[in-house]
Amino acid sequence: MMRVFLSILLFLISSFCEAQVPGYDFRQPQRDGVTLVGMECHHRNMTLEIGLFFPANPPTKRMDLWRLDDLVKFNHSTYFLEKVEAVERKCNIGDDRYRVRFEGIPGASNAMWMCGASTGVHATVWRNEKIVFDEDLYKCNREDYVSLVRLKNGMTSPEVERHR
Image 1: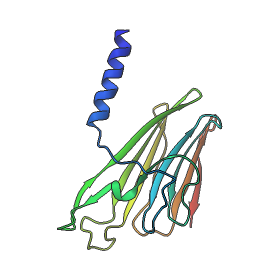
Image 2: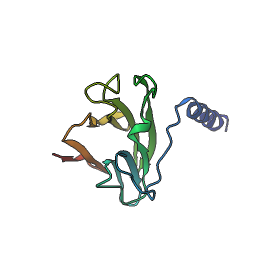
Image 3: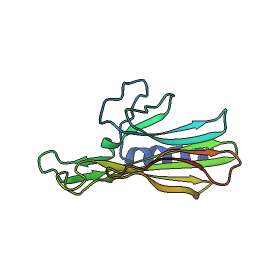
Image 4: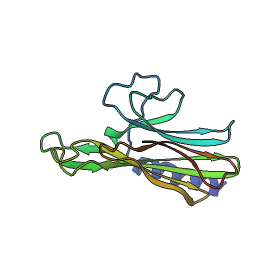
């Protein structure tokens, strides 16, 4: 009993210490210039999916979503990089324990430089504490990007769909 209480207490404390990046509702219209990153733990299909969504290809199902602009913060008066945020979520599918981390990638240290305020995102996925995917989904103004990563129960490596 005490062990369960301590683990719950530690979880609550760690969630308060972690930066809170606001979520994005998939039913909300995706405006031009808004890029989203998201994940879905689908227990019935025994899959974990992460993806990158531009206004031309918005998410079509319920997922946990975040704006790339919320993962990288620029100072509006100096145009310099202020903060890079990360979001981490966990889910269990079958006997596998997954941890997904999305971290912002600033386009430049100054929003007026080469990539401007354009941002990217790096994703890391652990299955049972071993990294199974660790790659930039999207970088500053890059034409090719990873649009979808799917991990199915029983597969040793993820399915990766790229847009080129």
